[in-house]
Length: 296
Image (spheres, one colour):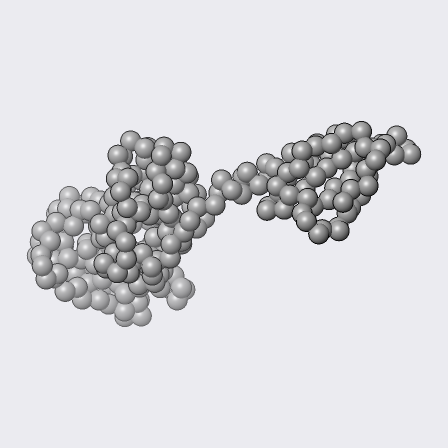
């Protein structure tokens, strides 16, 4: 298969992406060795000749091998949100869902029954080794779930997957979230009234209506509804102390389940509350007015 009678150096055949390749050098007229390569496969007739010096060859070979190692390292099995939801409904093998975000994000809203194990300390979480672990973070751009999965695999875990699209895709596909600090949970949830963004727009400036943004302060400062006050969901119980029960309140968040949970908590404490339909995403998509910074 090779015509390398004058070869001066051979390298063992290597498997690159499933194709076994053999390499050899032969002196060339200009003093540079000529690199010959050919697939080490039966009945294969393809031969190629590339004129490179030895240093270039070593750089190219190293880059190829490193690239394959990186690609292999990053390949973590993924599961779709729909498939995970079916498994959680008892229509598949047992799966343990793990939220690798920080505790604050987890408390604000997470996939039902999920365990919080931040990716940078996931080994210390003592996660069960039986069954399949499904890790998730914010979205596909977030690397934490894949980093956590690789850490677990290196620690001996055999069955680890990541959730394709993360919690953003989970909520976008209409699946439920739960929050850690929803108190006095009842079998029948308190119904939450809603107000449409268009109607809320007409009520801006009405002194009898208060607006509460339950997102973190960092997000609130970037953009919020005019006149809104920031009471993050994590501190809702203490934050609403002292608010007038005579006023009507409108609550919103970027995650509808969190806004509903906040509205239920306030309703249980005697407030008249509505949730802003669609939250701040729909409000901003309609190009309704927004303010920035903290309320003075």
